[in-house]
Amino acid sequence: MVSRICRRFCYKSALSIAHADKMCDQTHLTDKPDDFQELSKFPFLSVHSPHFDTIANVKKMMHQFPFVVRDSILRTDPEMRGVVERYDELCYYTGPERDLYPGPVLMDCYTALESPEKLTCDRLKMATMLSWAFEHAGTSTIIVDDVMDESVERWKKPTWHTLPQVGMRVALDVNLIRMGAFAILRRYLNNHPNYKHFHNLLAEIIHQTSLGQALDVATSGLFRKTRDISLLSFDGFYAITKYKADFIIYTAPILSAIYLAELDPNLYFDSVRLFRSFSIYRQAQNDMWDAFGHYANYGKVSSDIANGQCTWITSMVLIHGSEKQKELLQENYGRAEISCRNVCYRIFEELDVLGKYVELKEDLVRSCAERISEVSHPGFARMINTLLEHYVVQEDFLL
Image 1 (cartoon, rainbow, N blue to C red):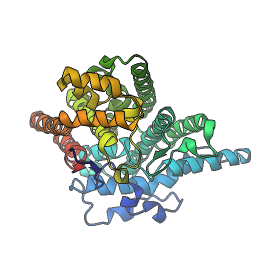
Image 2: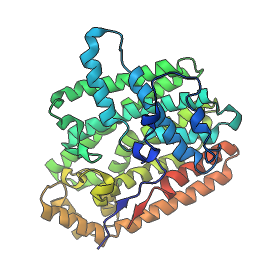
Image 3: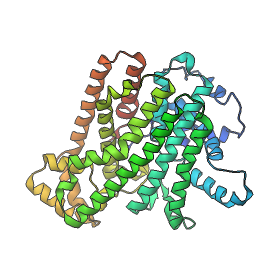
């Protein structure tokens, strides 16, 4: 039987604030020009060292989170006091104590691309604030996902919309946190020569992920209604991934890092097929965590099978499964009964889904090696290697 898979938390995007030494405890709300000076004194944080782009970058994000909350909503009008207090609660409940997605990717890419002499405190602070603007947009997506999936728990605590003081007001909260992302952008990056590109990328994150969520919900709902197994195909999985995950994780952060370093954006577009492969792998990884992840590490209860969602795993059944296995999936997938779920897991085991996931990972490693050998820009080659090391090689499963 396939072993249950544990999510491994090490220095990677899944770092929580607890693994970042509780940097918020060391932060005071004063805008000092040397916000990052203390962090820069650590001997292991030399630029472009293996640890600089991981532990240090997440620490920088956590160090700045109180400023993000403070500056992402209007605080000058006394009549808004109740709204502000609720917003603060929302941010601290959904913000730091969780997995991080686009922010660490942006920070890792920027520190790999930028020349060492330009990695000043001011530039790192801009990168950090842009990372949190993107994370705010990502948080709004996660909140909506939990509502649509009727999830009651995430990150080992009740989902935001299930709290007694929230309920249907969650719709307003999603709008507030999205607008907070734009407020951060205006406050900290308005004077950057590529500000308009950052603004467009943030808007497009919200646009693309909203389309992806709508497609995801429509696909799963239609499957439960019609039992049309073709809805669970790789084409369907890729379409959902393209909108829901690709732009927010492997398009906007990489382009933003390029714009922050004031480099040619064609660096990204010349390698777009490789980054699409990163997105497919990342979504496949997420689907594997949902299906096989230990609650102690994953922090939520699996929902994809019961909801009938189109995933990388279902696409593997349609590609490699026998007619009998496809019939069983069609009959049992998208149902909440434990017996139906067990049938699905038996199919996944028979097809060695885990082995196919390992093959997907190996293919991506080979593609990265080929692309690195072709890239002339040393910083961009270093960036691809950083993404490979941090989000593919190190971020894996324990069996």
